[in-house]
Image (cartoon, rainbow, N blue to C red):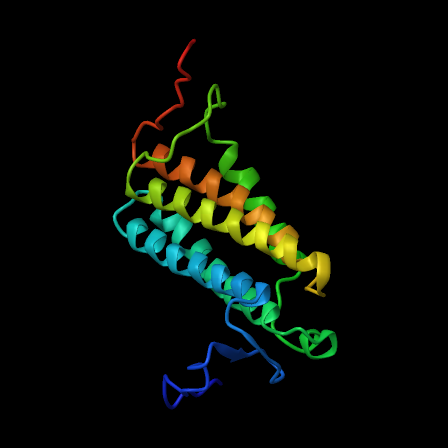
Length: 191
């Protein structure tokens, strides 16, 4: 059980923060940017879950998104832990999390019409928030790719973010379908 007695420590007032294990780093370090963006993604998924309260897709997708929020918190903890030994004993995303997303993508994608154009974000509140979450997820993935070039990360961090962005795309399409909202399609300007 985590117990937080106070919100501020004043330890970050000079632009530094501590990683899990105590190592002090600048707040603009790539590792901090990675888990900060994962935290941002988790916040956007909070918006998704709120929008799902008024969506026909909510009964199916809300429990999935609740699980994903917990998995993202695990991923954030994993990214905040640079030491391999300590990380091995901490919460993490693992292969079964990626496999669960694969199964959910396949199940819901089977109900969707084939794509005949690129989709623009829209299709109702729930769908729109899924598309926002997808773009934040892709940014998190790009940052984690950069981090992985120079530092150790968990084995499933990149596969998880990659699959989650795919899932968020499918979930957004499925929410629009269930809500009876048309998906805006890209109409390229002819030259």
